[in-house]
Length: 232
Ligand SMILES: [Zn+2]
Image 1 (cartoon, protein in one colour):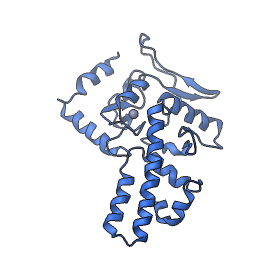
Image 2 (cartoon, rainbow, N blue to C red):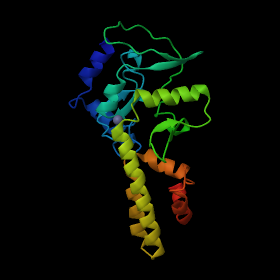
Image 3 (cartoon, rainbow, N blue to C red):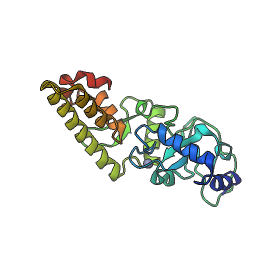
Image 4 (cartoon, helix red, strand yellow):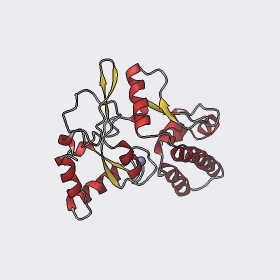
C-alpha cells in the first residue's frame, strides 16, 4: 500500500464529514438511483478510483477520478489498468508486492463513465445473450477499449446478464401497459407514473438500448404505437 492509499483508507470513513458528502454526491450522480457506475446493478456504496490509487497515487484525492461503485466492481478492478500504446493495449496492472513506480503514460484503455458515454463504444446484444459487446464498425482502438472495459469489470457476469434480460422484459411490459392505458383514456397522472417506473429502474442502459434498437422485431410494434417513448 502506498502512502496515498493509506491516507485514503484513514479518511474514507463514516466519521469523516467530507467523505460522507463525497459518497452521497457520487450516489446522486449515478445513472440510476444510487447504483454502481460500472454494473448499474448494486448499490454504489464505495468510492472507486477510475485511475487506481495503487498506480496513480497523485489521483487518490481527485474528485474527477471518483466513481460511485459497488464492492464487487471496486474489488474486481483493484489496481488493474491499461493504456493505449502505439501497437495496442498495454496492461500496466500493479501486482500486490510490486513497488510503486510511475507507470508509462498514455490514454486510458478503460472507458471513463465520468466523461464518456460508454454506449459510444459498447452495445447491448438484446436478442439472445444480453451481453455488453463492442459496437459494430469500431476502429481497432475502439474495439480494444470496449473489450477491455467489459472484461475488466466483468460486465457480462451471469447476475448482470439475468438482470438485463429481466429489465428488458419488464420495460416491454410497462410500455405495453402505457399504450393500453392511453388507448382506453387513462388519466395523465397514471401514465406519468408508468413512465417513471420505467425510468427509475436499475440498468438504465437497457432502456437506452431499447430506444436505440427500437427497430428490433420485439420492439418495433411497441415503439410504433408509443413513438414519444423514443425521447423519454
Ligand atoms: Zn458494480
